[in-house]
Image (cartoon, rainbow, N blue to C red; front, side):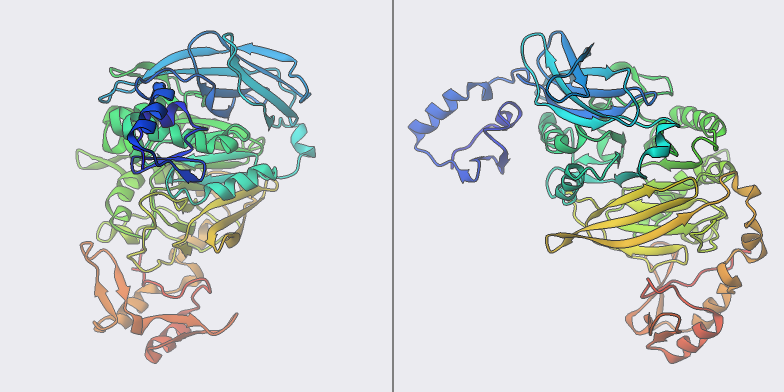
Length: 571
């Protein structure tokens, strides 16, 4: 086979749609050639030899603006004066806005330079279909794309419920969820995408070419539906340079960030925006592990942002960050989750913890990725367990008027790293766990009702709804004032089950319960202790009949779980 420099992929994306393992494919046919023909072919694609600027607009993606009358667009293209043309008539966009340009320099070995462009489509009529083209005065133009403008308060009344695709950890290779997302985009099902960190795996790989390929591959989605983002640990190389530059079009309302590597840039590490009935907040969970000063600045901004939300206009408040505050798959759920949840230990005291802040301001959902699985949890009220951090929190197992923040992990979109197994049994707070590929679909119907679904994409070529829950909230306000707080304060556990009795019942059964390798932070059932439901509303059936009787006396397990971990007494 003919070896081809990977630079070809950057400059001839249509001629070279895939280059794998250093070899070239043209369409579906692999190139094989004699040395002479290989030379002629390489001479024809002489751009491979030198990293020329991008010749046509590509890697196009849009983002919500600072208000419903704006939509931003960012792309890579040749240097020079650039513009966006847009309008409601597909036969000829009637409005024109000049764009701004900046040079993004990849600081790796090859020192590749990009000319990136951003333009803002202004004066949009809310809730209206628009068509647009980006281009340059030199003559380079993109194909035409369409999008629907955001809704204002009035137009929202006549618009169908808004639907959001939410996921983390989507790679360019094995991006399992992407075909499904493209179908949903083509069908007009999505009003916004929220990608919660970890892109391409990784954007800086191969001197940034892997990031180029990823941005091209998501373009059918990202150029049509606002593609909102947060950064993750896989963006950390070179101080998050690729993330920061490639998504400068986010609606930054948190000032700017200054870096020795690339100067002063708009802050897209933490920012917020409104969409329909939702106030969204993107956070950086990564600063907790790298920069104490930025951690403090972000926390101060978050206090102000959450305190200024108009819950009449945007009753739902949804925060996202790459790392989870609660999960149950591996050691991340012990150390890193505790750091983000409780904050950094400074002079013997936790500072800048997110959980208590979410609780105090009535944040409805916190959504994360990072773990390559799916885990929807119930409401979790703050209660730190210093002995077993995994057991922290109290839950009422509620989806109707939950008196605390609901936590969700959706990091199973697919990447080279594959699945991440659950090494801990499901805790009581866990409503559903899946180790399959997919993405989450959130439909906000009104001020009180939100439908959450998990779209499973590895079901034999078809999409399946693998999890579904209505989250209903009639009391959007700080949770300390929630009318159902007494349910937690009385016992801290749903249905007042004395979970310590389960722990006592299991003591002395080493064949079924064993300490895990994670510093004794969880108990784990062996196969002999697993239980399942007989049927709806009936007691569990366990291999261990004594355990079955104990569970029947103490209360029912949720039907979605096959096994469950005993909880400690939080009181």
